Structures are given as structure tokens and as C-alpha cells.
Image (cartoon, rainbow over all chains, first blue to last red; front, side):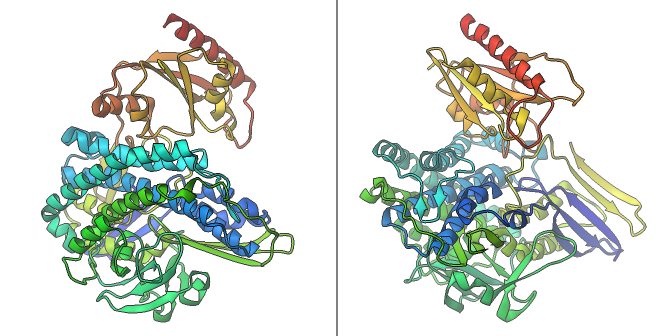
Length: 474
Length: 149
């Protein structure tokens, strides 16, 4: 192996990571790795805490998708109690989950990826942020900010605050929506529909300009996994797991999330803190699978709401096609956002959404509780084991982003091999490698704040450590 | 409402909660003044400041542990600047929020930033003596600003 190019940190993602690109003596890329360089340790320091505290603690895992952790944790708590929560509580949880997916996807699409999409991969890096987007299309930027604000506002109304809401609990939730709050949510809906219409049209109009990126950034066969309901429709809160291959064949269906250890396993590599989950029957690394918007849009029979289904049909080019191109995560993300708006509208029209019967109480009845849901980035599992006093003996979190780890690594390698010339580094080449990571919208750790600037330095070194080339953003 | 006070910080990281302490000291807030307490500034705040003619961002300033100066600053944001590459994505500065609001939402009000020195940002509640003293000074400075209209 000749030289190593390091992109550190990867920008416009949630958390801290770097990419290593290895090139041979001719400057051709041989391989690439995506390293996650931060470590959190939630699974360890939760040991000894009462299980009913877990939703509040787990809300702190992430500042972008805390709701997913609250819900998976609450569901694990439901299982430890051995209770069925009330219909009103279930609808409230669903409402908050849709709001969360909407706001998280809006952040990913409008704030993190639209600078590449609207301004171009080779645009001046100093312009590739939301201000650059605003300069290009003020209305587009405003709508993106307000879509996220809508989702955040729903979370705040239910959970008391928009980040880290300690609202879910074993047995239900702590608060329902009031009538006044329901009306406020309803007031946002028309604007949200209009914004989604504009965003989808804009994306589809510019997609043809990214033919190379679609073809060479994360375009490979893999398995896909997502949650579906009993009829195969898209499901974010509860259901069974479906695994599909890259040709549209259902590999496994009706998988019970609480039995995840029987079909998923986790490998580790010394060069990354993030685990490498894989589909057990196919082994490691052949059992690579993708989760999240692209996977969900691939595995479902249909989405289940009319506007999103119309978009899904176009996404699938009006036939049953599994899309293998990771660049299309962006499109799938937009379709899911539209679906979320439709579901939020349905839920706030349901009389149960203002019912105060949102909590059932019981004692600890089981030693093990496993909860899962679809987080913005894919399927999330929380697995707790408790002692006779209900204190956590073991906690295991299987995070969506980790489940995409194998695919993200394959994506950066594929993108690097196609776009990077190891003898002549250009910023746009490396931005395309980073863009491969952004397709997955990885959430490496959001509850700790970045302080100050995050400069990007890319160095090309010879095998003896000699600096051959260097690019830097300040 | 005419004035919005935005207190930024995490009260579980001791002096990082100094801005929230200033709001406590100002309560009850005068007519026409509202307060918002947040862990961090995010792009949505660019829209939320729109109805106000005056916005004051309050935040703790990280000082060296040996610092004894209790100088609070209260400056008007005249030319909002934007950093790169982290600009307005995950955590934003007051100047970025004001710049974004002016550019995208048409904010026409005046904005100020109030920095409160702190020396202890470890886990836990309660301010250091220096931060407490600075919070009181900041509250007084804000009263004068609010009275001056």
C-alpha cells in the first residue's frame, strides 16, 4: 500500500469521524475506511439505574433524534412491566415519532445536504452551508428551516422541550396534547404540504445533474431492512421486520424485533469505535444490510398514505424495483417527510390525541425488555435486562447508524475509487467522498456540542510519512 | 411583545447556566419582555425572533480558571458574521441567527449579545462565586438597557 489520505473531520454530519483513503504508487485508490472516533459509553453507565429512569436518560443519547431513543426505551420498559399501553398513548408516541422523523430529515436534507445539491459538489466550500443555499434560493432555505421548526414544535408541545424531552415512560407517556395545542399543530399543516411539494419538485428537477454521483456513490447490492405492518405498509412505531435483497426478493419477513439477536450480530474492527452489525445467516461481512429511508422505501409494499405513495411510485419508476443507489437516500428522505406530514394530519384529527388516558402503571414483571422503532436513520433497538429490584443489569443499544456502518464503508471506498486521484487532490473530489457519508445522515453522537470551528484538513502522505499534498479549510 | 431575552446554556454544567440565572434575577419580567431558555441556538430561532423589535442573547463566556475579572459585556450585533464550515447547522452563534433571520425572514429589529464570564463548567448545578457575581451585573445592565428602550 502506497499512501494514505485522511479526511478529518468529516463535515456536515452529526458527530465526529474521519475517512482514510489508501492509494497505490500510481495514485489509484485501493481502499477506504470510515472511522468513528468518538466514544460515549451509555450502555455501561446505565448499569445499576432503575429501568423506569431509562427513557429520561436515553433521551440524552442524541440531540437530533432523542425521541427515537425515548420511544425504544419506553417500549423496552413496557415489556419489563408486561403491559399494553392505551390507544391514546400509542397515538401520542406515534405523533411525536413522525414529528421527529420530519425534523431530523429536514435538518439532513436542507441544512446538511442541500448545499451540495443546490450549489454543486464543486462549489466554493465557503458557500456550502445554509447561507449559501439562502443566497441561491431564499424561499427554499426558509421552508427548510420552518419544516424542521414544525417537527420541533410538535415535540416541544408534547414533551415540554424540543431537545431531550423526558416524556416517554414505561407504560405510556407523561402528557397528552391539549385541544389548543392540537389546533396549533393543525395550523402548520398546509405550509408543510406546500414546502414538501416544492422540495420534491426541486430535487427531482436537479437529480439528472448528479448522474455520476448516483452511479458511483454507494451504488452496490446489499440487503435492506425496515419495519412493516401486517400488510407490508411502512411502519415507524410498531410492526415486524422485513429483510429484502438487492433484487427485490424478500429474504426474511415477519421477524420479531425482540428476537433481534437471533438474526442480527455485531462485529467490531480495531480502527473504529462503531460496531458493524450484519445479518447473521449470511455471516460477516457478507451480511451487510442498509437501514433508513432508502431501505424502508425498498422493503415496503406501499407507504400507506396517498401523496407519499404517489411519490414512491415515481421513485420506483412505476415498477417494483429495489433502488441500490445510496445517493437516493435523499429522495427517499423527502418521500418519508411527506408521509410524516400526512400521518401527523391524520393523528391530530383523531379524538384520542387529546385523551388524558396515556399511562398505565404496573410493577416489574419481566427480567428482559426489548423495544424497537424506526428512527430517522433506521431501525433502533434498546435491550435491557434488570434484576429483581428493577435495576439495569445489562443494556445494549443497536443504533441505526451502526447498522449502516458496513455500507458506509463500502460507499466511501466506491466513491474514492471513482472520484479521487491520489496524485492530484481537489476539494471537490473529497467532498464527493464525504457526500457518500452524508447520504446516510449518520448520527454519531449529537448530545455533546461541537465547540468552535471544525476545520477540514486533508493530507496525502507517502509510505514513509512524507507529506506529498495538503488541502485545508479554515 | 417587544423584547425577547434568549438565555443559552446548560444549567447542569454549572457556570454554563449563568444566562438562565440572569433571567431568574430579572423576574418578574417587565411588560413587553419575554424570555426563552435554550441549551443551544438552532436555525429555527431565526424565525422565532422575527416578531420582536429587540433581541438579547445571553450566554456564558468560558474564562481561564484563574480569571478574577467580573467584566460583563453587552454589545449590539451590528454586522452579523457567519462562520464556516459549522455555520448554522448544529449549534449557532447569536450573530449567525441574526444574519440568517435578516437574510431569510426579514428580521428588522436590533440585537444584542450579553456575555457572562464563567470559570467552572464541570458537571453539577449552581454557579461559581465569579459567575454569580457576573450574573448579577448582567441583570443590572439588562435592566438599564430595557429601561432605556
